Length: 451
Image 1 (cartoon, one colour):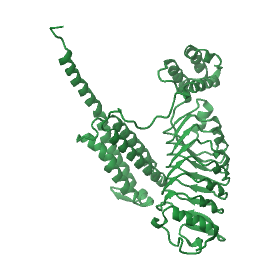
Image 2 (cartoon, rainbow, N blue to C red):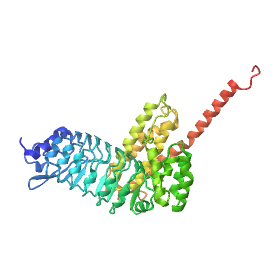
Image 3 (spheres, rainbow, N blue to C red):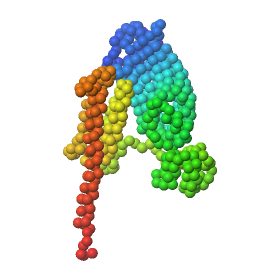
Image 4 (cartoon, rainbow, N blue to C red):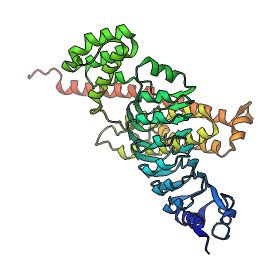
């Protein structure tokens, strides 16, 4: 059957992304008029919208998507798409909404994305995208929402993002980004939501920058000033960091003069120390000196190379991350911000327990609880909640006057309480091992008459 250029683009998507398994596929490849295919919308015979979110798409996106020249909305969120974002998407010059979030996309962003000058929403959160953000995103001057969270982007935030004057939402959290946030972000006067928590991004200590951050209604931050980034073990720089983070103009300058010069030596001599600007420059210099020695730390590492449970630890950690990432994306869509906070808190506690707990694969009750929380207890609570319609879960009381959303938050808190109790018991086990080892050494090397 001949469908024309637009039909070839859609047919390639169907064939390459497991169309026979889609939930919604009525009319696809069966009807000559592509405008009747489920999820496809047209205007004057031109395909303008392709909306197949949460429709079991798999495989990689075909280059033929670039044939849909009149497309304004492309929504493929919440599927199982893998591979790279095809460069040919840059051909869709009419796009205003591009949502590829909550998939398994990998690789770097294609530079041709910068050609989408009408794009208002770019949502790529919840993938495994890598590389730098300096790929021309600043050319998307119509952008109002840019969500790059929950990926593996690296490097620093380009100063040019400050050109996106229409941005109301900028999400950079849960990436491997590092370095100081550029001062140019203060130009984003329309910004209502900014997230950069769970990164190594650093805030400028400048009062104007801090004031700008404080004026953003919805802010999720690291709270770390770049003057605090110091080489491990450099006491002088650590004292300097604390001073610059908390003191005013005169005091910061004084501390800089008294502390920085002895510890940074001749490097400090070339740095102006007058006022907060000087303090900021000094903080920047401290950052520059240490940036090369810093690298984003993995969220989880096995405790020892010879750890017999290393494989299990890594498996559970990966399962936990994927569970929380998926649940966090669902909670975002439902506006369940309290649930997101609880998920991130329990994730951090579990990762900490996984890295510290001895005998993780054993029959010990605490080890069993940790394993089952990741494999069963937490997924079961989330799956039951996610199966409910969003409005019902958020508004309809189901027991004791509380909604399903309130119940799932309470269940996660209950689990978290049990995990914190396990965490509190871990030092006791360490103490007992230390004392047992001490008795062994005493018996083996204690006072002997023959010495």
